[in-house]
Length: 139
Image (cartoon, rainbow, N blue to C red):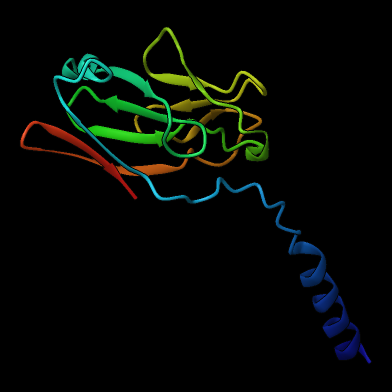
């Protein structure tokens, strides 16, 4: 009898602990951005620690960042908190974070991870690399 009760408790615990996926996922759409490093849209990236926004790619535009070590990072501007709202993050004055103006969530430019709630998921990242003085962003 105790064994059956234990099995029922485990099954119920498992069923209720597996929360329903809210579907709050930034959709994956093809991104294929290319620009010369001298392109006026991104020439600010010639200085490490700088970030720029490029419209027309991804869900809410691209957020491009060059860290202090000179590595390039690319994110979708669509906030990971309630992405169905397509709220585009904005670059903070600090140059180290971006903010979702709809929820107040903040994200690190180094890796896209959330640094202030309510967001709990990172921004969608894209591959970013330089070849022959051209910046490429793809997924």
